[in-house]
Image 1 (spheres, rainbow, N blue to C red):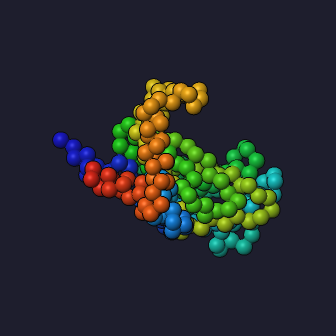
Image 2 (image 1 turned 90 degrees about the vertical axis):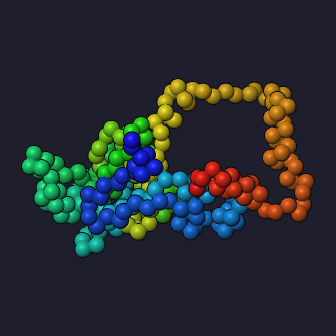
Image 3 (image 1 turned 30 degrees about the vertical axis):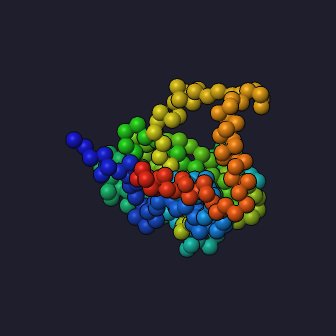
Length: 254
């Protein structure tokens, strides 16, 4: 039998040897969320810790003049126009490791997209998930390391598709250099069971038209969640967060 507890849910393959390896996301969002939220807001800390931090494989800067994108990096003293660019010296390293029939097939590091101010950046990784699991690649939860840059969200069927783990980015300012720090998370990768995104799952929703449609159970739940705690002036702060953490410890989840 397969030991599912010992089988990785996701395996990241580092293809660019100097790229920083992914890390488990943390509840403090890299230490940036307010202390009060870190202590008392379970919704924020759970979202922050869901998934893995993924980094750019090198420090670089981008510049968009409203028409074209340019890029530069350490060791280059000029702005390079971006169409498609390989990671420095990676093509030779790829050909030195790949089977002969794959020589010349190294993935690009950066590519300009047809949409204004948009580009694709390769993280230097491939990823493989367990069967029937996808990866949601999205902006880092509750943390923005790159003002002037927005990451698009994408769900990749990484149990079936084995290739470069890219992210699509959009520059939001013109004529202002945007620096990408290789030691700060660029995107967050979150594993999702495939059934969560299926129509059969997502079509299972309902609505109520107004207040009068709420049931006695709904009103009782509102009373327990919102009203009763606020009638206790000396209640401990963060009761919900404390209760949630205790419940997760009891069932053995983080």
